[in-house]
Length: 411
Image 1 (cartoon, rainbow, N blue to C red):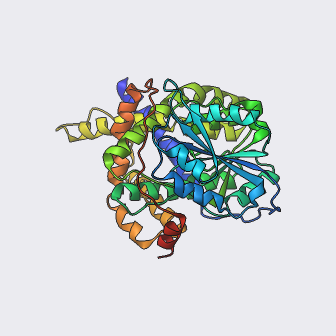
Image 2 (image 1 turned 90 degrees about the vertical axis):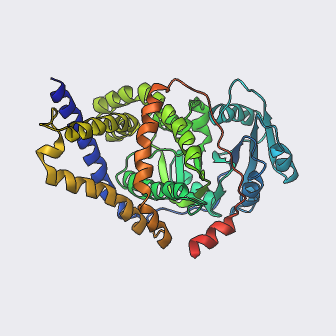
Image 3 (image 1 turned 135 degrees about the vertical axis):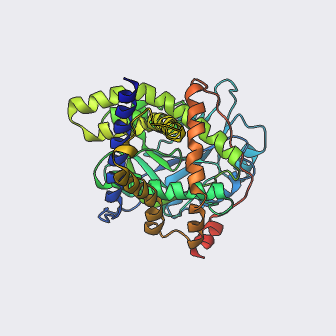
Protein backbone atom coordinates (compact mmCIF):
# COMPACT_ATOMS: atom_id res chain seq x y z
CA UNK A 1 0.00 0.00 0.00
CA UNK A 2 2.71 2.46 1.04
CA UNK A 3 4.75 1.52 -2.02
CA UNK A 4 1.81 2.34 -4.31
CA UNK A 5 1.32 5.72 -2.60
CA UNK A 6 4.99 6.62 -2.98
CA UNK A 7 4.98 5.53 -6.62
CA UNK A 8 1.84 7.55 -7.29
CA UNK A 9 3.42 10.65 -5.75
CA UNK A 10 6.52 10.15 -7.87
CA UNK A 11 4.41 9.97 -11.02
CA UNK A 12 2.48 13.14 -10.15
CA UNK A 13 5.66 15.09 -9.40
CA UNK A 14 7.32 13.74 -12.56
CA UNK A 15 4.34 14.82 -14.67
CA UNK A 16 4.45 18.32 -13.20
CA UNK A 17 8.20 18.43 -13.82
CA UNK A 18 7.67 17.30 -17.41
CA UNK A 19 5.04 19.99 -17.89
CA UNK A 20 7.43 22.66 -16.62
CA UNK A 21 10.19 21.28 -18.86
CA UNK A 22 7.95 21.45 -21.94
CA UNK A 23 6.99 25.03 -21.08
CA UNK A 24 10.64 26.12 -21.16
CA UNK A 25 10.88 25.41 -24.90
CA UNK A 26 8.43 28.27 -25.49
CA UNK A 27 10.94 30.66 -23.97
CA UNK A 28 13.60 30.02 -26.61
CA UNK A 29 12.16 32.79 -28.78
CA UNK A 30 10.97 36.35 -28.21
CA UNK A 31 8.11 38.15 -29.88
CA UNK A 32 8.81 41.78 -30.69
CA UNK A 33 5.43 43.00 -31.77
CA UNK A 34 4.68 45.43 -28.95
CA UNK A 35 3.06 48.70 -29.98
CA UNK A 36 4.84 51.81 -28.66
CA UNK A 37 3.00 54.90 -27.42
CA UNK A 38 3.99 58.45 -26.58
CA UNK A 39 4.34 59.07 -22.81
CA UNK A 40 0.87 59.76 -21.44
CA UNK A 41 0.31 57.70 -18.31
CA UNK A 42 1.03 59.24 -14.93
CA UNK A 43 2.77 57.18 -12.25
CA UNK A 44 3.07 57.13 -8.48
CA UNK A 45 6.45 55.50 -7.88
CA UNK A 46 6.48 53.79 -4.47
CA UNK A 47 9.71 52.73 -2.77
CA UNK A 48 9.30 50.39 0.20
CA UNK A 49 12.04 51.07 2.76
CA UNK A 50 12.85 49.97 6.29
CA UNK A 51 16.12 51.43 7.62
CA UNK A 52 17.65 51.74 4.15
CA UNK A 53 19.77 54.88 4.60
CA UNK A 54 22.76 53.15 3.00
CA UNK A 55 21.11 52.37 -0.34
CA UNK A 56 17.95 54.43 -0.79
CA UNK A 57 19.84 57.49 -2.08
CA UNK A 58 21.22 55.61 -5.08
CA UNK A 59 17.72 54.46 -6.08
CA UNK A 60 16.18 57.93 -5.63
CA UNK A 61 18.91 59.43 -7.80
CA UNK A 62 18.25 56.69 -10.37
CA UNK A 63 14.48 57.28 -10.35
CA UNK A 64 14.78 61.05 -10.64
CA UNK A 65 16.69 60.58 -13.89
CA UNK A 66 14.40 58.13 -15.69
CA UNK A 67 13.88 58.75 -19.39
CA UNK A 68 10.28 59.84 -18.95
CA UNK A 69 8.65 63.29 -18.60
CA UNK A 70 9.27 64.41 -15.03
CA UNK A 71 5.84 65.99 -14.73
CA UNK A 72 4.24 62.57 -15.31
CA UNK A 73 5.57 60.81 -12.22
CA UNK A 74 6.18 61.43 -8.52
CA UNK A 75 8.37 59.43 -6.13
CA UNK A 76 7.14 58.34 -2.69
CA UNK A 77 9.46 56.62 -0.22
CA UNK A 78 7.51 54.54 2.31
CA UNK A 79 9.62 54.93 5.44
CA UNK A 80 8.20 51.94 7.29
CA UNK A 81 9.07 51.87 11.01
CA UNK A 82 12.43 53.47 10.26
CA UNK A 83 14.83 54.41 13.04
CA UNK A 84 17.59 55.76 10.80
CA UNK A 85 17.95 58.63 8.32
CA UNK A 86 15.92 57.08 5.46
CA UNK A 87 13.15 59.70 5.67
CA UNK A 88 15.58 62.62 5.95
CA UNK A 89 17.56 61.42 2.93
CA UNK A 90 14.34 61.21 0.89
CA UNK A 91 13.33 64.75 1.88
CA UNK A 92 16.79 66.14 1.19
CA UNK A 93 16.66 64.62 -2.29
CA UNK A 94 13.35 66.29 -3.04
CA UNK A 95 10.95 63.34 -3.01
CA UNK A 96 8.01 62.48 -0.77
CA UNK A 97 8.97 60.81 2.52
CA UNK A 98 5.90 59.03 3.89
CA UNK A 99 6.57 57.86 7.45
CA UNK A 100 4.65 54.98 8.94
CA UNK A 101 4.93 53.79 12.54
CA UNK A 102 3.15 50.56 13.37
CA UNK A 103 5.46 47.97 14.97
CA UNK A 104 2.61 45.47 15.30
CA UNK A 105 1.95 45.28 11.55
CA UNK A 106 5.41 45.09 10.04
CA UNK A 107 6.45 44.12 6.53
CA UNK A 108 6.17 45.37 2.98
CA UNK A 109 2.62 44.15 2.43
CA UNK A 110 1.27 46.17 5.34
CA UNK A 111 3.37 49.19 4.36
CA UNK A 112 2.02 49.15 0.81
CA UNK A 113 -1.57 48.79 1.99
CA UNK A 114 -1.12 51.83 4.26
CA UNK A 115 0.60 53.86 1.52
CA UNK A 116 -2.12 53.20 -1.03
CA UNK A 117 -4.79 54.46 1.36
CA UNK A 118 -2.73 57.61 1.88
CA UNK A 119 -2.22 57.95 -1.87
CA UNK A 120 -5.94 57.83 -2.63
CA UNK A 121 -6.46 60.80 -0.28
CA UNK A 122 -3.99 63.05 -2.10
CA UNK A 123 -5.13 65.83 -4.46
CA UNK A 124 -3.22 64.41 -7.41
CA UNK A 125 -4.29 61.02 -8.69
CA UNK A 126 -2.25 58.79 -11.00
CA UNK A 127 -3.01 56.37 -13.81
CA UNK A 128 -0.77 53.69 -12.35
CA UNK A 129 1.32 52.74 -9.35
CA UNK A 130 4.75 51.13 -9.59
CA UNK A 131 6.59 49.53 -6.69
CA UNK A 132 10.27 49.03 -5.92
CA UNK A 133 12.41 47.95 -3.00
CA UNK A 134 14.91 50.46 -1.63
CA UNK A 135 17.93 48.38 -2.72
CA UNK A 136 16.84 48.29 -6.38
CA UNK A 137 18.12 50.03 -9.48
CA UNK A 138 15.95 50.61 -12.56
CA UNK A 139 16.68 50.82 -16.27
CA UNK A 140 16.16 54.40 -17.57
CA UNK A 141 13.39 53.32 -19.96
CA UNK A 142 11.37 51.46 -17.31
CA UNK A 143 8.41 53.88 -17.27
CA UNK A 144 8.34 54.03 -21.07
CA UNK A 145 7.75 50.27 -21.15
CA UNK A 146 5.12 50.46 -18.43
CA UNK A 147 3.38 53.26 -20.34
CA UNK A 148 3.34 51.13 -23.50
CA UNK A 149 1.93 48.08 -21.73
CA UNK A 150 -0.76 50.07 -19.94
CA UNK A 151 -1.79 51.71 -23.22
CA UNK A 152 -1.86 48.24 -24.80
CA UNK A 153 -4.34 47.02 -22.19
CA UNK A 154 -2.26 45.43 -19.42
CA UNK A 155 -3.51 46.01 -15.89
CA UNK A 156 -0.73 44.34 -13.89
CA UNK A 157 2.83 44.20 -15.19
CA UNK A 158 6.02 42.58 -13.93
CA UNK A 159 9.41 43.83 -15.09
CA UNK A 160 12.48 41.71 -15.83
CA UNK A 161 14.24 41.04 -12.51
CA UNK A 162 18.02 40.92 -12.51
CA UNK A 163 20.73 41.14 -9.85
CA UNK A 164 23.00 44.13 -9.37
CA UNK A 165 25.71 42.10 -7.60
CA UNK A 166 25.85 38.73 -9.42
CA UNK A 167 29.57 38.14 -8.88
CA UNK A 168 29.98 39.09 -5.22
CA UNK A 169 29.83 35.50 -3.98
CA UNK A 170 28.71 32.03 -5.04
CA UNK A 171 25.37 32.81 -3.36
CA UNK A 172 24.71 35.99 -5.36
CA UNK A 173 25.79 34.12 -8.49
CA UNK A 174 23.26 31.39 -7.73
CA UNK A 175 20.52 34.01 -7.40
CA UNK A 176 21.60 35.52 -10.73
CA UNK A 177 21.42 32.15 -12.49
CA UNK A 178 17.98 31.57 -10.97
CA UNK A 179 16.76 34.99 -12.11
CA UNK A 180 18.02 34.53 -15.67
CA UNK A 181 16.38 31.12 -15.77
CA UNK A 182 13.05 32.35 -14.36
CA UNK A 183 12.87 35.38 -16.66
CA UNK A 184 13.64 33.44 -19.80
CA UNK A 185 12.24 29.97 -19.20
CA UNK A 186 9.38 30.58 -16.75
CA UNK A 187 8.08 34.08 -17.41
CA UNK A 188 8.67 34.44 -21.16
CA UNK A 189 7.04 31.07 -22.07
CA UNK A 190 3.90 32.14 -20.25
CA UNK A 191 3.95 35.44 -22.13
CA UNK A 192 4.34 33.66 -25.46
CA UNK A 193 1.52 31.23 -24.64
CA UNK A 194 -0.87 33.89 -23.32
CA UNK A 195 -0.84 32.52 -19.77
CA UNK A 196 -0.64 34.53 -16.57
CA UNK A 197 2.76 35.72 -15.44
CA UNK A 198 3.62 36.00 -11.78
CA UNK A 199 4.76 39.00 -9.76
CA UNK A 200 8.25 39.08 -8.34
CA UNK A 201 7.98 41.47 -5.41
CA UNK A 202 9.52 44.52 -7.08
CA UNK A 203 9.43 46.21 -10.47
CA UNK A 204 5.65 45.79 -10.44
CA UNK A 205 3.18 48.14 -12.11
CA UNK A 206 -0.56 48.30 -11.38
CA UNK A 207 -3.44 50.12 -13.02
CA UNK A 208 -4.82 52.50 -10.39
CA UNK A 209 -8.48 51.72 -11.07
CA UNK A 210 -7.77 48.03 -10.59
CA UNK A 211 -6.01 48.67 -7.27
CA UNK A 212 -8.88 50.82 -6.05
CA UNK A 213 -11.39 48.16 -7.11
CA UNK A 214 -9.51 45.17 -5.66
CA UNK A 215 -7.77 46.81 -2.75
CA UNK A 216 -4.26 45.67 -1.98
CA UNK A 217 -5.13 42.99 0.57
CA UNK A 218 -1.79 41.21 0.14
CA UNK A 219 -0.16 41.26 3.57
CA UNK A 220 1.38 37.79 3.74
CA UNK A 221 5.14 37.18 3.73
CA UNK A 222 4.92 36.87 -0.08
CA UNK A 223 2.62 39.72 -1.02
CA UNK A 224 3.62 39.41 -4.69
CA UNK A 225 2.45 35.80 -5.00
CA UNK A 226 -0.69 36.56 -3.02
CA UNK A 227 -1.67 39.45 -5.30
CA UNK A 228 -0.91 37.29 -8.36
CA UNK A 229 -3.38 34.69 -7.12
CA UNK A 230 -6.04 37.31 -6.42
CA UNK A 231 -5.66 38.77 -9.91
CA UNK A 232 -5.85 35.45 -11.73
CA UNK A 233 -8.87 34.41 -9.67
CA UNK A 234 -10.62 37.53 -11.03
CA UNK A 235 -9.58 36.72 -14.61
CA UNK A 236 -6.86 39.40 -14.74
CA UNK A 237 -3.61 37.89 -15.99
CA UNK A 238 -0.44 39.76 -14.98
CA UNK A 239 1.87 40.35 -17.96
CA UNK A 240 5.65 40.36 -18.23
CA UNK A 241 7.79 43.04 -19.84
CA UNK A 242 11.12 41.54 -20.83
CA UNK A 243 12.67 44.90 -21.75
CA UNK A 244 12.00 46.80 -18.52
CA UNK A 245 14.90 45.87 -16.24
CA UNK A 246 15.07 46.08 -12.45
CA UNK A 247 18.24 45.16 -10.58
CA UNK A 248 17.92 43.73 -7.09
CA UNK A 249 20.64 43.38 -4.47
CA UNK A 250 21.12 39.82 -3.23
CA UNK A 251 22.54 38.66 0.13
CA UNK A 252 26.21 37.72 0.14
CA UNK A 253 26.21 34.88 2.64
CA UNK A 254 24.47 31.54 2.82
CA UNK A 255 23.05 32.39 6.25
CA UNK A 256 21.41 35.59 5.04
CA UNK A 257 20.17 33.80 1.92
CA UNK A 258 18.70 30.93 3.93
CA UNK A 259 16.89 33.37 6.20
CA UNK A 260 15.41 35.22 3.20
CA UNK A 261 14.39 32.03 1.41
CA UNK A 262 12.85 30.60 4.57
CA UNK A 263 10.58 33.64 4.76
CA UNK A 264 9.65 33.17 1.10
CA UNK A 265 8.81 29.50 1.54
CA UNK A 266 6.79 30.07 4.72
CA UNK A 267 4.75 32.60 2.78
CA UNK A 268 4.44 30.30 -0.23
CA UNK A 269 2.98 27.50 1.89
CA UNK A 270 0.46 29.93 3.33
CA UNK A 271 -0.64 31.25 -0.07
CA UNK A 272 -0.70 27.80 -1.71
CA UNK A 273 -2.89 26.46 1.09
CA UNK A 274 -5.41 29.28 0.55
CA UNK A 275 -5.48 29.52 -3.24
CA UNK A 276 -4.45 26.22 -4.88
CA UNK A 277 -7.73 24.31 -4.74
CA UNK A 278 -10.07 27.29 -5.39
CA UNK A 279 -7.96 28.39 -8.36
CA UNK A 280 -7.59 24.86 -9.76
CA UNK A 281 -11.31 24.17 -9.42
CA UNK A 282 -12.22 27.47 -11.05
CA UNK A 283 -9.78 26.79 -13.89
CA UNK A 284 -11.20 23.32 -14.51
CA UNK A 285 -14.77 24.55 -14.30
CA UNK A 286 -14.14 27.40 -16.77
CA UNK A 287 -11.72 25.48 -18.98
CA UNK A 288 -9.23 28.28 -18.29
CA UNK A 289 -5.65 27.02 -18.63
CA UNK A 290 -4.16 30.24 -17.24
CA UNK A 291 -5.91 29.57 -13.92
CA UNK A 292 -4.84 25.92 -13.93
CA UNK A 293 -1.25 26.85 -14.73
CA UNK A 294 -1.19 29.45 -11.93
CA UNK A 295 -2.59 26.90 -9.49
CA UNK A 296 0.22 24.51 -10.46
CA UNK A 297 2.71 27.32 -9.91
CA UNK A 298 1.25 27.98 -6.45
CA UNK A 299 1.62 24.29 -5.58
CA UNK A 300 5.32 24.17 -6.52
CA UNK A 301 6.26 24.65 -2.88
CA UNK A 302 4.45 21.39 -2.05
CA UNK A 303 6.05 19.67 -5.04
CA UNK A 304 9.46 20.65 -3.71
CA UNK A 305 8.57 19.59 -0.17
CA UNK A 306 7.17 16.18 -1.12
CA UNK A 307 9.75 15.60 -3.85
CA UNK A 308 12.68 16.24 -1.52
CA UNK A 309 11.29 13.82 1.08
CA UNK A 310 10.64 11.16 -1.55
CA UNK A 311 14.14 11.51 -2.96
CA UNK A 312 15.78 11.16 0.44
CA UNK A 313 13.61 8.14 1.33
CA UNK A 314 14.39 6.41 -1.96
CA UNK A 315 18.11 7.19 -1.68
CA UNK A 316 18.19 5.63 1.79
CA UNK A 317 16.17 2.64 0.59
CA UNK A 318 18.58 2.01 -2.30
CA UNK A 319 21.63 2.34 -0.09
CA UNK A 320 20.47 -0.31 2.40
CA UNK A 321 21.81 -3.77 1.48
CA UNK A 322 19.28 -6.16 0.03
CA UNK A 323 16.27 -5.69 -2.23
CA UNK A 324 14.77 -2.16 -2.13
CA UNK A 325 11.42 -2.00 -0.37
CA UNK A 326 10.01 0.79 -2.52
CA UNK A 327 9.58 1.10 -6.27
CA UNK A 328 11.21 4.14 -7.83
CA UNK A 329 10.81 5.65 -11.28
CA UNK A 330 14.57 5.34 -11.64
CA UNK A 331 14.28 1.55 -11.33
CA UNK A 332 11.44 1.39 -13.84
CA UNK A 333 13.20 3.43 -16.53
CA UNK A 334 16.75 4.46 -15.58
CA UNK A 335 17.65 5.76 -19.05
CA UNK A 336 14.59 8.00 -19.31
CA UNK A 337 15.12 9.21 -15.76
CA UNK A 338 18.76 10.02 -16.49
CA UNK A 339 17.90 11.97 -19.66
CA UNK A 340 15.14 13.85 -17.86
CA UNK A 341 17.52 14.79 -15.03
CA UNK A 342 20.18 16.02 -17.45
CA UNK A 343 17.65 18.08 -19.39
CA UNK A 344 16.31 19.61 -16.19
CA UNK A 345 19.74 20.88 -15.15
CA UNK A 346 20.65 21.82 -18.73
CA UNK A 347 17.84 24.39 -18.64
CA UNK A 348 20.00 26.61 -16.45
CA UNK A 349 22.88 26.43 -18.91
CA UNK A 350 20.51 27.19 -21.79
CA UNK A 351 19.12 30.17 -19.86
CA UNK A 352 22.63 31.60 -19.46
CA UNK A 353 23.27 31.20 -23.19
CA UNK A 354 19.94 32.76 -24.21
CA UNK A 355 20.38 35.65 -21.79
CA UNK A 356 23.97 36.25 -22.92
CA UNK A 357 25.21 36.01 -19.35
CA UNK A 358 28.83 37.07 -18.65
CA UNK A 359 31.28 34.23 -19.22
CA UNK A 360 32.44 34.23 -15.61
CA UNK A 361 28.89 33.32 -14.58
CA UNK A 362 29.33 29.84 -16.04
CA UNK A 363 31.92 28.81 -13.46
CA UNK A 364 29.30 29.13 -10.76
CA UNK A 365 27.31 26.32 -12.34
CA UNK A 366 29.72 24.04 -10.45
CA UNK A 367 28.40 25.22 -7.07
CA UNK A 368 24.86 25.90 -8.27
CA UNK A 369 23.62 22.35 -7.44
CA UNK A 370 24.51 23.03 -3.78
CA UNK A 371 22.25 26.07 -3.88
CA UNK A 372 19.45 23.99 -5.40
CA UNK A 373 19.85 21.24 -2.79
CA UNK A 374 19.81 23.79 0.01
CA UNK A 375 16.17 24.51 -0.84
CA UNK A 376 15.27 21.07 0.53
CA UNK A 377 16.00 21.63 4.25
CA UNK A 378 14.77 25.23 3.98
CA UNK A 379 11.46 24.07 2.51
CA UNK A 380 11.18 21.24 5.03
CA UNK A 381 11.63 23.64 7.95
CA UNK A 382 9.30 26.19 6.33
CA UNK A 383 6.50 23.59 6.15
CA UNK A 384 6.50 23.16 9.91
CA UNK A 385 6.81 26.89 10.61
CA UNK A 386 4.48 28.19 7.91
CA UNK A 387 2.17 29.82 10.43
CA UNK A 388 4.99 32.14 11.42
CA UNK A 389 4.07 35.48 9.89
CA UNK A 390 6.97 37.41 11.43
CA UNK A 391 8.55 39.53 8.72
CA UNK A 392 12.38 39.68 8.71
CA UNK A 393 14.43 42.46 7.20
CA UNK A 394 17.28 41.75 4.78
CA UNK A 395 19.98 44.30 5.48
CA UNK A 396 21.53 46.15 2.53
CA UNK A 397 24.76 48.07 2.95
CA UNK A 398 26.49 48.24 -0.43
CA UNK A 399 26.11 51.39 -2.50
CA UNK A 400 25.94 50.33 -6.15
CA UNK A 401 24.77 52.75 -8.82
CA UNK A 402 23.22 52.03 -12.20
CA UNK A 403 26.36 53.01 -14.10
CA UNK A 404 28.30 50.43 -12.04
CA UNK A 405 25.87 47.68 -13.03
CA UNK A 406 25.89 48.73 -16.69
CA UNK A 407 29.70 48.86 -16.83
CA UNK A 408 29.98 45.38 -15.34
CA UNK A 409 27.44 44.01 -17.83
CA UNK A 410 29.42 45.51 -20.72
CA UNK A 411 32.72 44.04 -19.49
